[in-house]
Image (cartoon, rainbow, N blue to C red):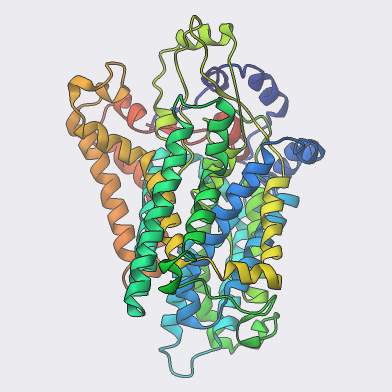
Amino acid sequence: MPVKVRPMEEQAREFPGSSTLLQDAATTRRTPSFVPKLGAGIISDIRARAPWYFSDWTDAWNYRVIPATALIFFANVLPGIAFSLDLIETTQQYTVTEVLISSFMAAFVFSVFGAQPLTIAGVTGPITVFNRTIYDIICKQPNAPNYLQFVGWVYLWAAIIHWVTAVLNWCNFVRYVTLFSCDTFGFYISWVYLQYGAQVITRQFSGDFEGALVGITLALLMLVTSFLFQCLSETTLFHRHIRRFFSDYGMPISLIAASSMAYWGRFNASNPSTLPVGGAFQAANGRAWLVKFWELDGKWVGIALPFGIILWILFFFDHNVSSLIAQGSQFPLRKPPGFHYDFFLLGITTFIAGLIGVPAPNGLIPQAPIHTTSLLVMGKPSKKDVDEEEQITKPSSQSGYDSNGAIIKMEKSFDYSVGQREAPIAVVEQRVSNLAQGSLCLVLLTGPFLHILGLVPRGVLAGLFWFMGADALKGNGITIKLLYLMRDKTLTSPDDPLRKVRKSRLLMFVTIQLVAFGATFVLTQSIAALGFPVIILLLVPLRAYVIPRLPFTQEELSILDGPTASPFTMESVGGSLHTA
């Protein structure tokens, strides 16, 4: 099976004005960690990242950290709470407090101790489905065990496997993850966001009908205003600083404005449904924060093991893919990653989550790449870099295939007689924005701010779900291919690399992705929802061993698929592999 390794010179040329990336990468290049020595990957990650630790804090003295913190705080906390509403109402074992504590714990651990502080971790939709399914299963059993004690053992088994995975360097498996898997998983996550937005609305119809209609109005208001700010930021209207302001603060402003509308005039009279909140720093049902999982009956300890394996599969793919996309090759990064070490830390946070009875956090899509995008420093490339860029005929599918909400439009041509368009020249790589947004979760747990949180209408959360889901779909690789198939060929650029792919092969490739997406989505809606992480993980061997045996040429596969992150980022897992 032929293997293509993208040279680092290509990455340096992908970003006009970032020629120093190659030199920085060379200084941190290390021997691939794909070796049998125990803990080699963790040690390599620590050695590579440790010299940058002090600068991770000093580099935060940059204005980009402020809008990044504000954006990711709203994009992380509110969807996490909304995802957990079903879990909260079904199990009666969690409240908003548990969700906020989990988000803070993840932010603190990965921002202070992690090797990849740009990766945002928190409570995701899949983990809420996982926990709810466990509740549905064990509660039907005779002499059902204590739910939180059982989940504590599930998390402990998963944590142990996380630690074994990191020590045995199994994160090197990530080198086989390409855009095929990331686009399919990102497509699934996008539709999960859209589905949850619809669920938030439909559940309001079980109560007051007028309040539900107001919820729909607020959701549409949130959706439309968020996209309006985004569209204005991409036009030539206004000064560039104003456009960047729209990009940075458009979503938070839309959320605050839509929430305020719920308390204006007749909207307020309809009494729209809002978020349920409990007491400050109080666990559900007044329980103690320490879950004594060691008191669980022995037979249930063994039964928890298969659940722990499934959770490990979910986190192995979800968290590592989140880290990959947050450090995608469209971002001009210069600090090394650390997949093995961070996965070991994920085992620690999973264990702590079971110990204190909160949903286990892991890497977030699309929040992780959105975080990196918000930290981009834009600038005008030099004439030399533009000339070098114009000499390269490499297809520009990488930026187009960047899925899950972090879309960076790289301009390939510049008119110096008129002016230059800005391009990403750097990323503010630091730890403060992640730590700050997590710390704000603790602030929300205080009495006054918890009261404010309780004023947020559920309809606004539905609109936030729709915006994030639609925005992620807009730049997903599957969506781009589908739009290409529907587009008038006379209006398609002659330089579009998809023109070199036979239409039948393009249809075949997209069909495979859609079938995989459909199987995952349908499974999560069934009683067998616990098995969906297995399908997600099988995307990798499907791409590596099955698709190359289908009637694709190597050139077609190189256009339809590609590596998610740059070779520089993939150093942590032994190098970048693009299986064609």
